[in-house]
Length: 145
Image (cartoon, rainbow, N blue to C red; front, side, top):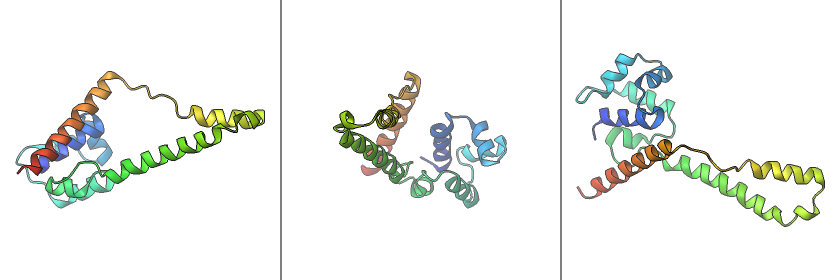
């Protein structure tokens, strides 16, 4: 995958492929973005630096060399660590529900209901699945060459 394709991939995962939205976020013209993702087009360090500044979860090594994964796994780990910590805390406190004051029980309920079931569309999940599979294929392909 060329750097042009990697930039197009970022646009795809961040904005569903909308060059216009990506260009607006970056403060660039849509024509400039189109030039960056044109296969074989030259990409200097300034746009790479700007992308990495704007999207802290993009792995710099992947963007520059194509090695590794697009998303820096430490960002995902931070989110899941926080989620598991909140769930563990609520589960640890569950045994105290019968002993809580009404106001405390309402506070607990409010915290627990913050972990509501996500309601993502099938199209969103399908897109994420394709992107995940593409990422897994890319990693597998690099390991075998």
